[in-house]
Image (cartoon, rainbow, N blue to C red):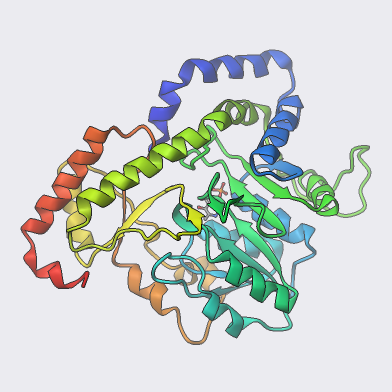
Length: 372
Ligand SMILES: Cc1ncc(COP(=O)(O)O)c(C=O)c1O
């Protein structure tokens, strides 16, 4: 949310690197992209990182590089950004959507086993809101069934699971640098990370028509290049990311302390994960009236997401949904509310928001039963 404050704060540095790119004459896939790829790989403790045009493309290219396509099934969740499923659909594969756990809002490993079929080639696991999914359980099921795990890290850049950075847990990690993300460009951008050299080489080719370094082609590709300006901005921002993520955690803790006695569900942190709070999502059965009240008092909130992906008209016919229905996915859709969350929020800003929420609930006693 609200990337403008950060970009204003660092405007002079950003303008200076943009000016360097203009003078360099290298505008696409040049030395700055290569340098950013090296630094991002190091940040993830991975040997290979390949810059692409967006997080959605990162997912598509990852699946194509794994040989996943038409006739194959890829398991994911319906409670995610539409982009997760759009990325799968673009590879030609059929998304199979399963339910989430209520505590973490991430993929339910229990539901996973039930939908694995001979057609299943990959799982796209989403580290939603800045927290990892239950990776041990998911990786074990994947290993037993010989299925690839691709991580959708778009909302979790810098997050860790048992000490390992997201992106390093599955076969491929996919990142988005959409402006609102924890590490945001001023335009589109994405990254694929992997420790498999052959996969890295394939993604490298697929991102530009299928070309090898000497412009020969053995297979087809797309045009999904990262440009030098975005790379220059991102390379400036990357060293600040851990500090920004730490500030997000501080803000989350202020919210948590102040809201603990309100009749709402607060985010639950996995003990084995480091949450990077891309979003701070609460749940209440008074979601719409709370949202309206906050807006009337100058506080913009969000809903991530107002509709499960399998209800989206353009996609629903392309998606397979678990027969048992997505009970948790359906349940939370009218309850979730994303409170303002970005590192530049001041403590005063957060205190103002929490005092509004406290006032709101002190005037609506009847919802006290909800969080019991
Ligand atoms: C969970 C998730 N996956 C994938 C994406 C796709 O990223 P992009 O917008 O860079 O294509 C996003 C961002 O919107 C996202 O939040």
